[in-house]
Image 1 (cartoon, rainbow, N blue to C red):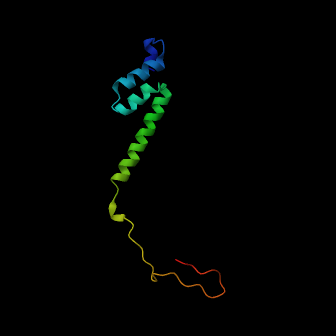
Image 2 (cartoon, rainbow, N blue to C red; image 1 turned 135 degrees about the vertical axis):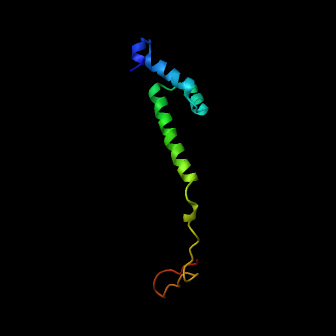
Image 3 (cartoon, rainbow, N blue to C red; image 1 turned 120 degrees about the vertical axis):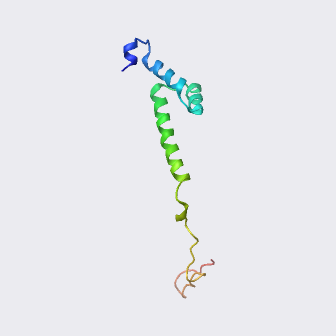
Length: 91
């Protein structure tokens, strides 16, 4: 809305340029400049990256006390099939 007041020839280009100028993520900035992202594409990629960063942060800082421990069955060997009930398992 503010950019509309400034009579820019191309409002989307002006907003995109400002975002690129001040964004903290240098990798995303380079990618957007190389691939010449539109404003919509830049906003989409930035939102996706924020979601991914949030998810990976949650995974990396998860409570490790709930690790899956090794599970042993009561019988370490599978039961031998009864005669006449299919093939014998070799494992």
